[in-house]
Image 1 (tube, rainbow, N blue to C red):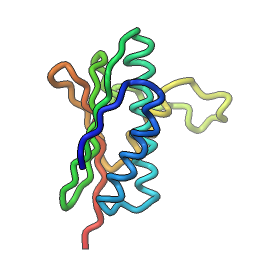
Image 2 (cartoon, helix red, strand yellow):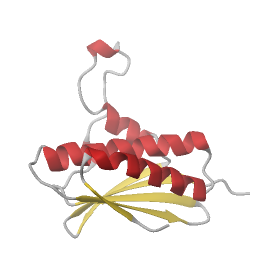
Image 3 (cartoon, rainbow, N blue to C red):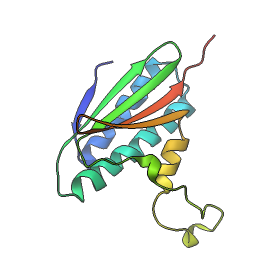
Image 4 (cartoon, one colour):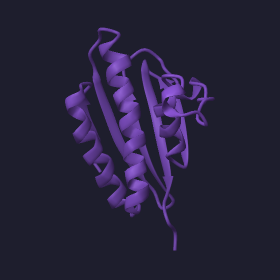
Length: 139
């Protein structure tokens, strides 16, 4: 698949979601797992847009690439915001509490990372790189 680059704005989220679902279909990922992947990528891209660009009074693009090999689908998301490793967000410790008693923040990132088989973060060339992996079914 050809990579996709979109403006780092909320209006780009639907294009990102469509791209992820198309990549998952091309890789033979079932609909349930493809939907979880889409939600994971959507959460991270939303955080890039809101926290990395809008709240920092910056603008930039979000680039997405699908790498498909015989065993794995990898979705690579890159941005030029300040370095931010989502893995550094502590796991929510209030998951057993009713929703109105939980601490605010961190749940989306936690679910995004848990929604895929593997998640990696890198900072290279002044760009954040979030990588989402799903294992493909093998026969």
